[in-house]
Length: 170
Image (cartoon, rainbow, N blue to C red; front, side, top):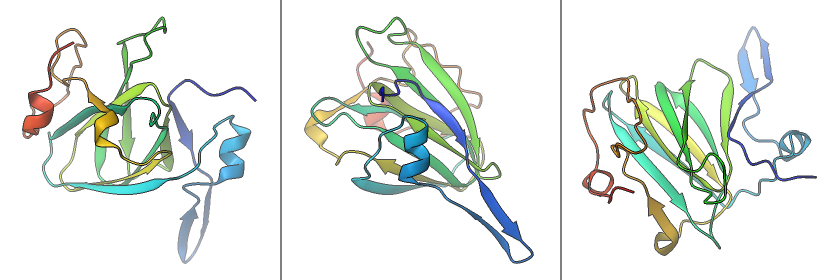
């Protein structure tokens, strides 16, 4: 099977009855059918209190380049991915996805893409599944305000870390 090299929003199957509902967030077999190879090494939860907060644009390089799955537990975000594969025709181009906890979806982000987001509501909770362990010496960033990338953040930025804001421009 070929390796998937695109970011993809995936609808999840939902099972519901009078008691409530269940959605499988991760199933190796179901992802395999979509040509997504994913072995979980780490799961992180991010909690962001304030609407308008920007986090990103982060990625890891080889040998710790990673695939990610993003799932909103509560709230709504604008999720942004940037192609950082130097030989790609889409190098440094970005794509956006609106993710909401009201949807029954996950976002698959393959290695070779930087990732970040802006919260569109207060009190967002996001779960990340990672295919690699976090290794700070292999982490790279792109400044989310870089005019060469030209991300149109929909809200005025309320918070951004110094690390993200001070990342050198491309």
